[in-house]
Each structure stands twice: as structure tokens, then as C-alpha cells.
Image (cartoon, rainbow, N blue to C red; front, side, top):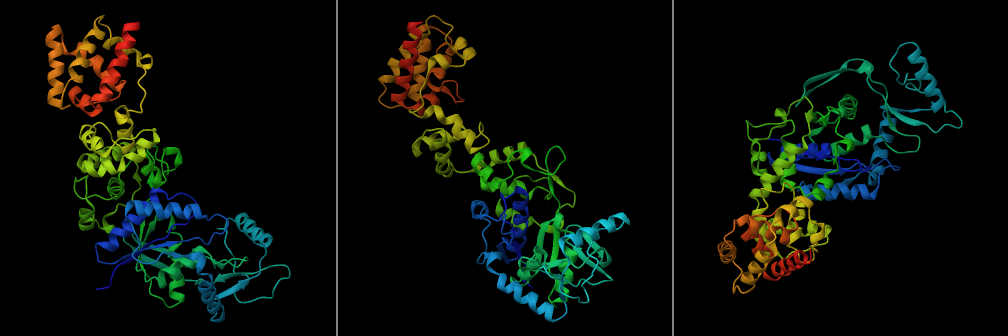
Length: 471
């Protein structure tokens, strides 16, 4: 049985788009589930637009998602000698030819074709030879078949047939000496032994040209699967106007890589009604043939929900390793023990690591509590009783003498205040919570106080008592 070999071949001319990542995932799954190989190739032949920073974004994004290459990463910019050797042989074998048309001549050709109601295309002027033109550096064109058709059984879209009459003799080497995409991709896929090409359906128009090139060179043609585009919620192609599209933006927003992988796998593919899949399950159930041919709509709220499912089912110790970088953005830090204690109480409140870090800020001693800046409505409700400062002072004294700051003993201290003053729990509870958290989302009050710790609790209660007594 032939081993499945797939590849992901992004161009480092911008961010690693979420649509490209889905293509990479489909390729990775298709190779791995068959015991095959997944390869990464950087298509950086566009010298003007390709950048090292974009290449780093691609590599960082793929590493974050765990979609690592099974072979050495190939860079097209390092392979020009190989491409040119193939082109020179094609010229010698009559499979390609020099075209001496100037840009002005090509433009005039297109305008005349448009005027006749024809599809603009190269007319084959130099296909059978011709004299060199002074002042013009020639391009090299592939001799595309003039008749017949190109057909392939697309694994997602079914049989696709294109007439060769619709194609022209496309350029395989530009006048500046650089080889073109449609040429390089064939050479690379052949040399990397790629036998399944999964890519976006915007490449369908390139496929017949590439198949003809494979056949002219006497090489085996791989199988193809063209995945549909991803749309935003407005029905238009997903772009920056819809929010984050660079995969590392999702990392910065606090999504877990497995949640992103899970969500992208479900964009256009399903296994019954199941929504949450481990990687092992994806490898077991995913089939590229089952990907829908219709475009999928990206739903950020669905991704947020899915990420929360992963937060709820990921060990607190693991989340505690990830949270510090998000806390640091807010200027705070918490020790690992405190994080592990707090995380179980925020799993169902926060949908991303960033939200969790934001909601936990109040636990940090570095956060300055300013009673004068408390939310107006919350302060009015919490401090409306004239004796609030007295309640809080009593609570402070009871908490300060505790030999161990456990939830049970804290709860007992709160109950003692309520009984001593014969008041409802809310009269002391609301004020104490606001004093300690400044209104941030927080769990049960005894848990909240335990997370803050004795020193911080006493400090903040004293601050609010002083504030209320000065009013």
C-alpha cells in the first residue's frame, strides 16, 4: 500500500491565515492517520513580498498547533538551480520555448481579444520559434496541449474537467529569471513524493496546468482535494474585517491550540453530532472525502464555547503554566499554587486564557484597590448601610486571628459577623467582596477571601474601612 504523503506550502508574504491552517490540518490528518508523512514547504520565490518575519509567523504558528513537518523544511528560494535545470531541459526537449513579447505587445494582444469578445490569453506567437527581439528579455513558456481536456477526480468536489482550449501557454520562468508558482509547485511536489495535494479551491484553476506539466515531464500525477473557502458571518470571504485571522492572534487572545484544531476540523466536516474531538479521535474519524464542498462560516462564539470546553477539561496545572504570560500583559503575576487553586473557579466564567487572567487580576497584591473608583452602582448597593464599616471591622478582626486561612474557617468568621449583628449575609458579604475584588468576577466569598490570602484581605478591608469612616 502506497504511503500517503501530503504537504502544506504557504507563501511568507503575510500572516498565517486561519484558512491556510485548516488546509494544513486536513493535510496533516490525512497523512498521519494513514501512517504517512506531512511536509512543510515555504514558497518564498516572490522576492519582493516574502519576508523573514512572515516565515517566522508560519513556523511559530505551526509549532504552536503541533502541526510539525516530518521532513526537513523546504525553501523554494534555495532551489532555483534545480528549477532552472528542469526548465533548460524542457527547452532542449521542445516542451517549453522562449517568448519575446514585450509587456506593451501583450497588453495590446489582450485589448484586441477583449474587443472581439474573447477571453484574454497568450496567442502562442512564439510557440514554434521566432527571432529574438532587441531590448526584450524573454520569458519561458510551457507548451500546453492545444486540444483535449484535463480531468481529475477531486476528493472533495468530485470529477472536474477542463478543456485545454481554455488554457494558454503559461509562463514558467519570468524575464527576471525567477520561476513561477505553477512550475515550482510541480517540481517540488514531485521531488518530495507528495501524492495527495490538499489546498483551497482558489487553486482549482491552477490544477489543469499543473497536471499537464506533470504529464509532459512523465511524472505521476498526485491526487487532489480542493477545500472550500471560509466565510465570515456576513457571507463574505473571511478577512481581517471579521476580526482575528492570523493564527497567532488566537494564541494572543488566549485560545488553546487543541481547541483551535478541533474547531477548524469541524469547519466543513462532521462526525455525527459530536462537537468536541481529541486529536486521537480526529485521526480516527476524519476523512478528506467527507469534507463538504460548500463554503463554511466562521463563528467566533462557537470557537469561544469550544475553547471553554477545553479549559474545563484541561488540568489546572497545565493551565497554570500558560496563564502567567497573559497576567503579565496586565502587569501582574501570581504564584503557581494560587493559580492552581483559582483556576477551578474560573473555568466556567472565562472562555479564553486572556479572559481568565483578566478576571483574576484582583488576586495580585500589585493591583491597587481604589474605593473612590469602584463601580458607582455596586458601591452604592454594598455600602448603603451606615454600619458597613463596623461590620467590616468586625470581620477583619476575626479573620486576622485565624491560625489557618481555610475556606471553612473563613466561612465560620463570616457567619459569626452575621450572627453578632443579627443582619443578613448580604450586608457584610457584598461590602467585603467589593472591598477585596473591586468588583471583578469572583467565586463564593469564602473562596474569594482564601484566594486573596490573609495579608491582602486584611490590607484591603482596612483600606475600605478607612475610606468609609472618612465619608
